[in-house]
Image (tube, rainbow, N blue to C red; front, side, top):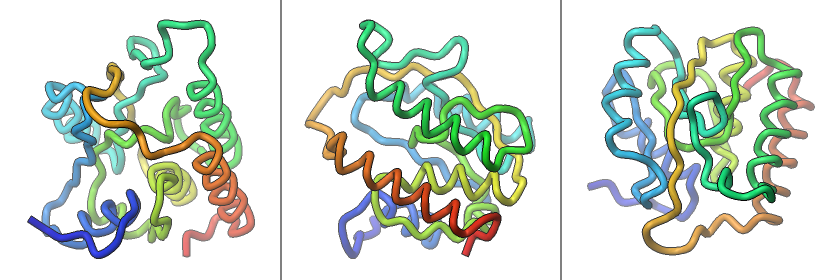
Length: 179
């Protein structure tokens, strides 16, 4: 067990990669949103495809987003807008449909090259941007996002959205640099 020195989703991501000598790292939130049976699938997909990053996409064909049961999907639409923006700005490979989902497998050395420095919720977004900036190979596999089983999300919409905008603007100002 590793103690996290301070709060923050990004802090946990940094701690995970800094504390391992494994070649790949899987990020997975055990709040019931994701299907644990997808864990071996995402590792297999990552290995077979030779990817730097594989995202379990909630947006691609064959996937399911928890908001898909209603016509009003603000979180999904905002995620898709952020995803469209960074695909247009930096992506040189196939379109990535879900740049924000936290369920992902990444090569540890590729993640270290990205030099991600966000401490909060935009960590996955920054990771996706920087992988695109560096021309790394990103793959996706469909997943199903279920309603949370326990607790409430601490990612409040407005503050989290503002943090994403600030992260995007900062990355745009940096151009293709990652640090």
